[in-house]
Image 1 (cartoon, rainbow, N blue to C red):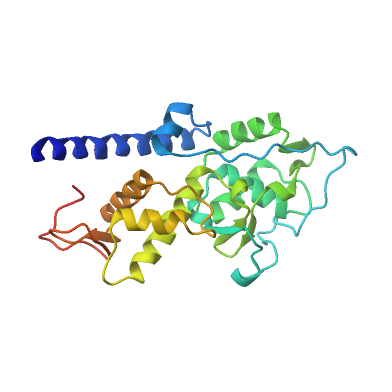
Image 2: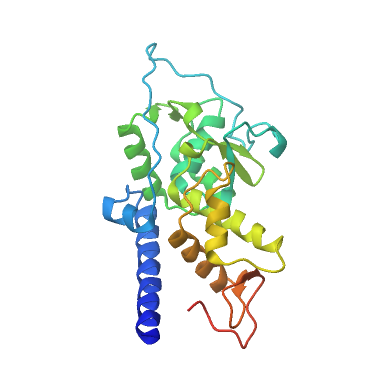
Length: 255
């Protein structure tokens, strides 16, 4: 009976890993998740329906990003209620492009936008960026002029601050929300030397109103496995306790 349970759990771990890989492929292709994948990962897509500006004119822009400048520093203490922050390095090119355009005091051509994205450590090819911009324009999120691209609704984009971006959870993709969840999870374990079980972690995250991301047990298990493979957390030998730091040589990888 125990052998069957072990096989079932191992099969589930493989299934969740495949689902996570599938999610990453959809992210790379800038495609919406199909319903079966959302159900598998326990994710509810959070989308914001763009509001059409009745005046038809551009909304107020922030500071220029054309010369590499970012939005004015605000500091974590000034993040508004209900807002979260995400490492820029973990953002998708699409979300980062919207944030850069929202921080610009004028339209940006694709080549300038490509440079701004690359300068922040996010990789994207020029033809991929051009296609992505066309899709965003089709959703009325950005508009094009002879000078370049500008964002239609700056309030629907994250704000840039150093190496992080912040805003309402709805302005981030599920990939970026997952990055935040893993970051919070890792910090939680670093502050708990005695370790925590996956179920305890999921309960704590689910009851954290400031998290701003989905946090089911299956998602937490997937996060723990990814963090373990990266050498950031490990599970104690012979227990269900997860602790911060790389695994020891005698410890086995997530069973």
